[in-house]
Image (cartoon, rainbow, N blue to C red):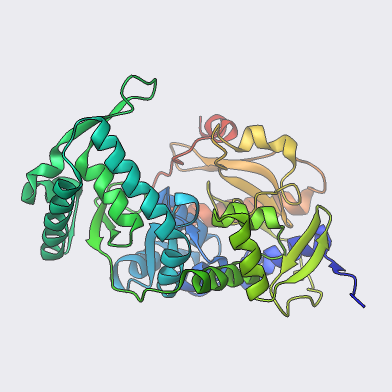
Length: 394
């Protein structure tokens, strides 16, 4: 006789989120590595997001910048690379081979094919020429240790060559060989992003040769990655898993079967948790507040977000491409947005007043002061700006 799947309420989902994503004060982590492991991946498209997401979850937020820089650029225990959905993430070093095999290889094949197709359309040199330039680039990068695209073009001038992209279309543009080739090599796992040219918010990153990692079986790697994600973010629906990984639904279903994922029911319908994760989870001892950055991995963690973010808030908190901006959280759900003004002040606005009283406003204010305390004189402007963030920033 088949047993009825356990129902996990929205309240319990929010409690899991608070505890496993280290957002409740008593669950904060000691190191950036622990934060990244708890979330599986940190969004890295906007360099500031990595630091802001870590700072919101560290027990000692004053160490956010030096400790995150140490992990990224000295110990290399965290690596910035392309991952799911062709998005830049920061992963724990031990997961990079898993991500490369489970998602990177397929994306890399498409990216190289697209580059060669675009070059051919523009009348640029062929694949053999590109392979020769690629070899020279990797040799120069190995010799330099870390370098920008411009520095590499000094060693290999052919990297400066340009070709027209999408000629005749409204999004026509001109690409340099270096820009597109470095992107392809990054997805292929041959190069990684290194130290920025400026401070921790800088988007001008150097490149470095990627550290060696074992080549894993694709199916095995997909199962490993899905297990990590379900343990951190479960329960989730099949649609959530397909969206987060960027895989075909057949790959998702195979991995769910391989890892023995447990079926559950959610308010949205059927879902899954990791094997052995059915036990009820007690919530945090007290309500919690957090100010999370644009593209934070918690805010962007699921395709279906209604259980923690009311649909009517989306126009104010997302940009036109579906990127979430800075969010204010109270007790497991998004209730508003925040921004930094030119003088450094952290300002916030409540957009959903349900259940937000004096206790919540006091806790949110304390989170804002905590954030300003470690950000200091640095000015942070999200790469993807949203209506409420622009308005608050003035």
